[in-house]
Image (cartoon, rainbow, N blue to C red):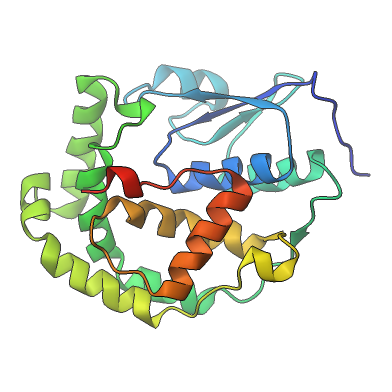
Length: 227
């Protein structure tokens, strides 16, 4: 049975603005016209998520009954159930070609996105300690520091643009009566974070898709802050 709760029942999403997994939850909450509040956690805040779900992880959804749940797609599907039943989410198709192409370019994408993330004007990096926490972890993952990653941006940009040019372009929501699909929920967040990279060339059809999904889900792009 599908329930659509009144606007007096406020849920809360604990998220980071830059987090692709968090964006999945935000996309569905906005698209389904749900009432909710957002709490942006500092990136080095271990205490808050641990108190809610026993570990440092986002997104977290605190439901109207004050229970909490994690795992981005589980949250997204829960929000789908709770939201406006007239705002349908179209079934998922085969996203393997897109996921496989992105996976092959993951190292280049990370080298572009990680060092730029801390330069974005987002709430989770409003303290030096939060920036340091993120930077130490991501530099360890990259195997080199952010300064080196930025210096080598042209190399990583070339690889990333080749990947973007090879992607099968997802169908735009506007081609389906402005409805979202589960493919969009899976694919869009990674593409959104590439808007941090100044001068990165998106194929025009893919760029139209990114703008279309962002508009439909009332989510932010980073073009105006790109580095």
